[in-house]
Amino acid sequence: MTQKTIDLRSDTVTQPTDAMRKAMAAAPVGDDVYGEDPTVNRLEALTAEMLGKEAAVFVSSGTMGNLASVLSHCGRGDEMILGDQAHIFSSEQGGSAALGGVHPHTLPTEPDGTLDLELVESSIRNDDEHYPRTRLLAVENTHNRSGGRCLPVAYMDAVGKLAHEHDLRLHVDGARLWNAAVALNVPPARLVQEADSVSVCLSKGLGAPVGSVVAGSAGFIRRARRMRKVLGGGTRQAGIIAAAGIVAITEMVERLADDHANARQLAQGLSQIDGILVDPETIETDIVYFELTRADLTTAQLSAGLKELGVLVNPTNKTHLRAVTNFSVTSDDIERTLDAFARVFQSQDHGSGDGVRVYG
Ligand code: TLP
Image (cartoon, rainbow, N blue to C red; front, top):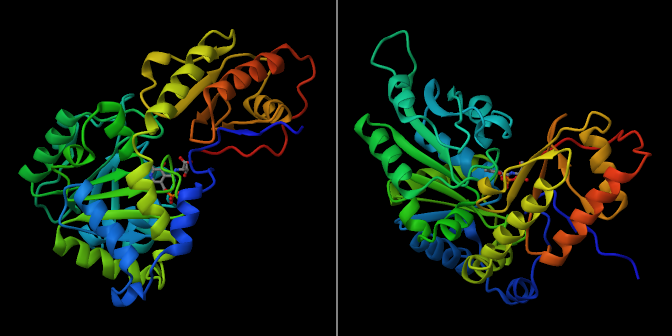
């Protein structure tokens, strides 16, 4: 029997569930650019309700959700404050600058994924013809590059209050807001109570094949819908994919706790291995970044060696790798993964690791 591949490259790699496939096949649809797709309309209404916002719009990806949001808040030359480890800054091709002329003002991301609020406050520009106008503050929850750390309610409230005191808008990249809500045991709406916009993904831990949803006030969503259209995201019988999104938000949120437990189990096991550095106490959700400290093995070689044993993990640079649990990975798979690490570490022949993709 061929062994199952344990895919820990991301939580985006899953197959849709049977319930999603059934819902997709049976979905009533219409032309969504006319606002006539009942399944899209239902997904948007349900998500808006879960996030405590007036309205929502279905978009193709997290990248489109963030871009449509930033461009709906900011005009050309306006400034957005965000962390230097934010996905919007690091991994979206600088789209808000490239397509919208929005000036990114980065601050150092703290190890827990937050921004220092005093630094944020002192970075907001005063009215001076030399300066861009600071319009937007963006935070990420959970914070991917900080290892899936959750920004707690008190911080989310404080950052929103600070933004509004200075007449800024707050955008939340909530690609994994669902994970934060489950880990912190709070409704997702509570985390984004002070946010003017939030983008949430359906196709990460929740397992839908495609899509994200942006939520905010009715006026903001009207602007985001226009922006989605100019970005080429106005799709027609999109209910086919929105149907899977409805299953994702109604049936797949609670089970994220299993992914979190598996990530913690993985980190605990890795922390016992001589040559790997990770603090299991910092693992709050589904993402485990860890450091390889052995001089005789590169991250690319480790990744290639694991792949030969049926375990996929992405190197993110020369010293670190990332593993992300998801619903295709069980607790037994984590044990097999740890065994694969031990076998690669014991092996004498590590190959070249050439051609391994550095990503995540
Ligand atoms: N993240 C992907 C990669 O791009 C790194 C992953 O595998 O984690 N916000 C955050 C916080 C994200 O982590 C991602 C994707 C996005 C936005 C963009 O979502 P998509 O891929 O749907 O455009």
